[in-house]
Length: 186
Image 1 (cartoon, rainbow, N blue to C red):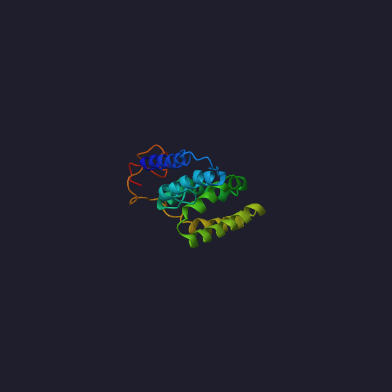
Image 2 (cartoon, one colour; image 1 turned 120 degrees about the horizontal axis):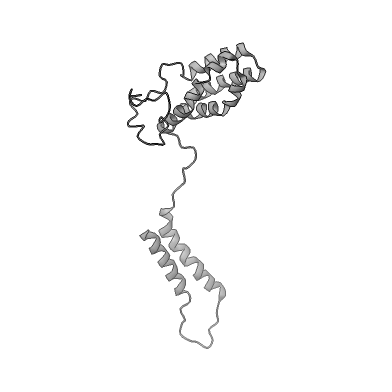
């Protein structure tokens, strides 16, 4: 904040100096171009010198970390697992309804492992093709391959024993999920 105040002060000082009256001369002629140059160049140089180091690049979009991967797995993974019964029954409407959650799971849970992400997405495309054609047997086969490749066939696919403290915040993705019980230490 102090650097910004200093920069603002110097900019105002530089622009004020441009308008200080000089000794009166009867033959003096005002040059509008030089006055504008003094007015604009001085503050620009001050901001360039003092403001330049303060400008930082923005990294808001596409941030990927182990935390975002765990969050995507924890939020959307249980919804994908819950579709196992719908696949067994051939409930294509339930799979259509959950398409967004499955796509978010695929893109988020494997964000740090691009080859795995591409495999899972390709297998899910096979699942989608079976849903579109309403082919129940093809759906079961494609779903089983997808489920295994996504690692959802494990006993506890979202075990985070070494992930540090969790569940203490109301906004933690594990709070309220049947897969995460703080008493068990998931």
